[in-house]
Amino acid sequence: MRARIYSLLVLFALSASFVCSIGSQPRMSFDEFFNGVEISDVNISPDGRAVLIGTTRADWEQETFRRDLWLWREGGTLAQLTRSGHDNNADWSPDGKWIAFFSDRKQQSEKSDASASDDGPPTQVYLISTEGAKRFQ
Image 1 (cartoon, rainbow, N blue to C red):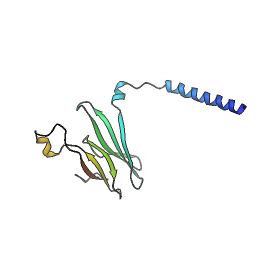
Image 2: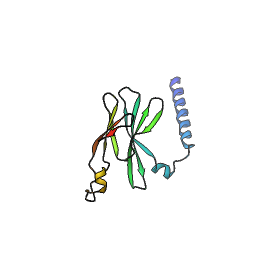
Image 3: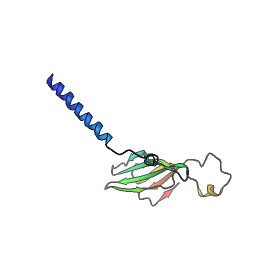
Image 4: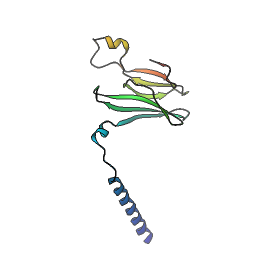
């Protein structure tokens, strides 16, 4: 019975110290909250040495949310794979040399076409090499 009382007292003391430590941290500002980056997708490579990261963040000038892909490699290097702001749902090829992803970015022919629909460009599949050099639709 005494062991139970002591364990409850220790648990209470630990929870009280945790609550006190939370209150001592500075509050997040509205700018920090609204400019935060959300990690929307995480996908580990077949060999376990790299991670694909899909992010979503607000782009206030364009009045949209940007979706971009990043590649983290073993050793701590982080590289941005895409910069169009329209890319998501990335996945590895079985050999780990290619990355496939969906994108609804505008094509060169669509940029000059004034008769494009209001629904936006269609979503298409793209491939990119893990080195980032080769990219095609």
